[in-house]
Image 1 (cartoon, rainbow, N blue to C red):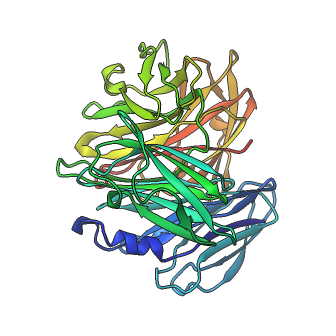
Image 2 (cartoon, rainbow, N blue to C red):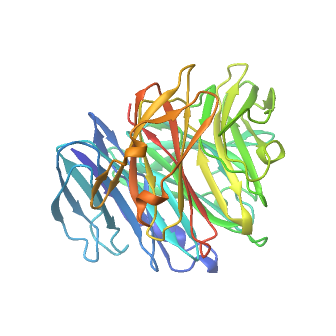
Image 3 (cartoon, rainbow, N blue to C red):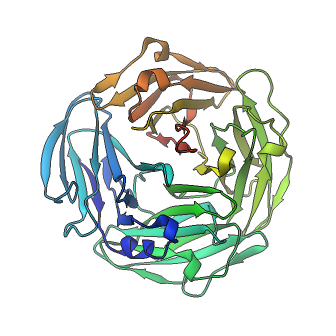
Length: 453
């Protein structure tokens, strides 16, 4: 069974604090719970802009149909049931925040994947992943309370017992636990929204380490950027559940006008030394940085655009050379100030699922990197509302070690959203999807893949 639940209320109140430019937002709380191979998945938030809506998308990854039951969606929020065919994608708008019931989506009979997305010319676009299960730790390298930067933590407790969490801030000069963020009580079967600007003074950039001392939770981070210098965008995702000594970021396209950074957070008690390697589509990539210190309980931004020429597609592999585990996330501010973040993957896998495309169209690139001495080969299947597509050119895509592979998905998407299933028939890979939206949006939606084991 696959289940996704979206309780409402707390986030809608938090959105009222956003600047006038964000008027019309209604943020719904979304805990998406998915049973995949026996493990539950949770999506900690859904966001609804009254002008464009927020869509929860679920895809049938298996060879047979699944039965879907949902409530709290659509205009009335009433419960509806339907079958979803093999390889098909289904989507549903979240109900208005006044709906009495939480949004719940349950799927029976097979493996599914899901994500939440929103898209509008005024605020840009973003896609948030699901998490397989609740945990006791969630990490984010990027957050900000600077003017024009609104950062929220959305803490979902899907269990019938109260949970307690503490939020540690990882700054350039060390860590702190702000007053009011220690031992925060999270009621049962609920989501709590924490607007970080309420708890500590303006800080340009910092990381977050959220730990549960009681119970298990799912934590998402929402960033809303509308700065005076023209930088703007929206980003939402679940956190990393553990630090790692190695991170792979398969995508990346250094803007000709703008900046790309890899932001590294170190939640440990020891200094980390990190090194980057850049992989390009052919030949040898630019030389990365070596043994950059990241302080204990702190963070460091590595400016990729100082090392990789503008207009270069690349992947990044970040390694902690002294073995101290860290967390890595890419931050890109592109032309016209478009702001986007995407988290790295701590390991490769033989199977991945990732969101692609949009109702607004755009140019879509699937990025892959291999891990190991041998060339990997992958089958790429595109799951759409009309059924699965298995284009012949994507039946056996080669991924050469030490290089990034890029697949133009645009001709296969027909200007519509989809879910992409990547299955390595030989070797293992890491996956990311980058969607350049039409000019009216001035945005790129960068989405990390979700490994399926």
